[in-house]
Each structure stands twice: as structure tokens, then as C-alpha cells.
Image 1 (cartoon, rainbow, N blue to C red):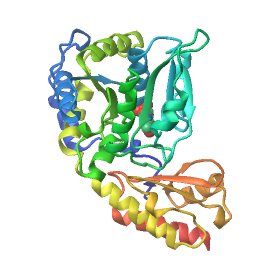
Image 2: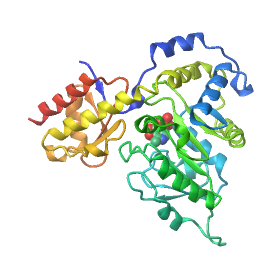
Image 3: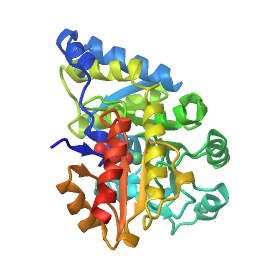
Image 4: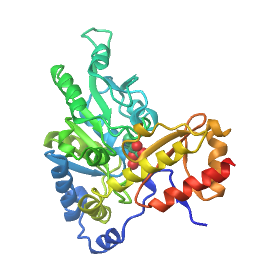
Length: 341
Ligand SMILES: Cc1ncc(COP(=O)(O)O)c(C=O)c1O
């Protein structure tokens, strides 16, 4: 049975070109800054996002943790959206390891309006843990791959600057946002950011932290502290170079497939989906009207070889990626129709 895996874009396997790049990669000890392939990837990533420098790390979670450590001091408060990945899915590392106090705020489809942030900034007071950082996530995963526009980011950036605070971007899927809006990542203003190579860009492993030289130097120290100093990491960085050179433009196909999937789901009576909210490669939909909760819907669909991710109650997530072709979208929809009847 063919498996149609719509759980996440993280399931993408490396391309043939990536496998060849691994074999041909020039290697060295990256802890000594001597891996030429890692160095090339870091230069390329910095250039692609318009920052001074970048650092290769093992995962998006490590990128976020290292960045928080590098941008703050223990005991500070961090303003973030209440459903963001850092707060929701990163095992509390923000507190348990970085020693920070998260201040979660409810956003609007992942966006935190400056007025909302402003209300939460701490005044100078002996009792308070001072605000040390503002974080945004773009695209926003739990908001259904929603995009925060460059203009919206600039508004938050300007607010952050007026309070002398750094703005950090969890841009795990920022290239999806850039491709969807036909703009450059450098137009999403922030002081520091990360993006993932291992999601829609199809590399097997790795994320890039990007920012100015001083931030990257601090980040490198924290990466080492967390055990993320890798040696011949060029083996993995080689795939990252292919990801950045070849895999960005094709994200538009994933977005087109996501839109079609949303439209087709909408045409099935009983499924709740907001087609207009599908801006990139994610679709959240409600199967309650079909008499399922997400657990039994996932179990039924698995029997037909179609995999989704579970969310709360009767909400299900689908993510399109390189492994999903137009015909897979149509097959998945057909399987749902059959299970409904
Ligand atoms: C928005 C966002 N940030 C960070 C991460 C963490 O990435 P990783 O799974 O590589 O740790 C994810 C993973 O899905 C994500 O969606």
C-alpha cells in the first residue's frame, strides 16, 4: 500500500543530489571552524537571509534554545505568542535550561500586535523580572502556517527598538512565507532568527541561526555548551547547501497543493476548513461533523495509507511537502470520502 504522509514536512527525505553532495563533501573539524562545507553553508545562509553571519545547528529546537541563551540573561521575561513552538513544543527549555520567564500572549493568527506587546512590557520595578526579548514565529505552525507580513514584522521591530529590546524570529518555515509573498527573507525585519533546512527544504538534518557577528559568536559558545559542537558536520551541511540552492522555489508547489487539498476538503460535507486561511503548506480541519474525533479519524485513515497529525478534539493537521504530488492530494481526499460513507 502506498503511504501518503501528510503529517509534516519534516518527513521529507534527502534528494538524490543531496546524497551525492554528502559523498563529495570536503570535511574538517567544525569545532575548529575547519569544515569547508559547513563554512560554505553558513556563508550562503547568512547571504540568503540578509544577515552578517550564521551558525549550523542540529535542529530547530536547538536553534531556538541557543538563540534565547545568546540574546538574554537568566531571569528575564520573554514575550511570545501563546501557541508558538518555543512555548508549546520545546519541552520548557526556555525555563528549564535558559532560565527565562515566558510571557505568553494570545495573538491573531500567530501575529502579536504591537499594542498587545506594549501592554506586557515590564516597567522598571525592583519586583519585576525585566523584559529581555520579544519572539515571533513565521510562518506560525499552530495558526495553520499563517504568514506574518514584512509590514507587520516591521511594526513589532520598531516597537522592540523603541524599548531597546531584541526581536527574535523563529523562522522555521520563513522561506515558505517569503515564497508565498514573493519577497526576500531579509524583508522580515528582526535582530536574529533561525530557519530549518529539515522541513520543506528537504535536508535530512539541521537548522541555521542567523544574526550579527557578535550574536553568532555568543551562539557558538552556547551551542558548544549544549553539546552541539559537531566535528565533520559537512556531511550534513552538504545537504543544506543543496536545500538553499535548489529547494526554495519549489515550495510554491506545496502551497498550491495545500490550497487544492483545502478546497477539496471543503467540498466534502461535514468537514470544517477555512480555505482562505491556507496561506502556505498547512491545513487545519475539523472532522467533528463526520462523527470522528482526531484520534479515530487518524486511525481510520491510517488503514487506507493516509497519515495526518492529531490536534485537540476533532482538529486534524495536514502538511504538504515534496513527497506529496497532486495525485496524492486527490487520493487522500477520495479516501476521506470513502471513510465518510
Ligand atoms: C515553528 C517551529 N519552530 C521550531 C521547530 C523545531 O524544529 P525541530 O523539529 O527541528 O526541533 C518546529 C518544528 O516543527 C516548528 O514548527
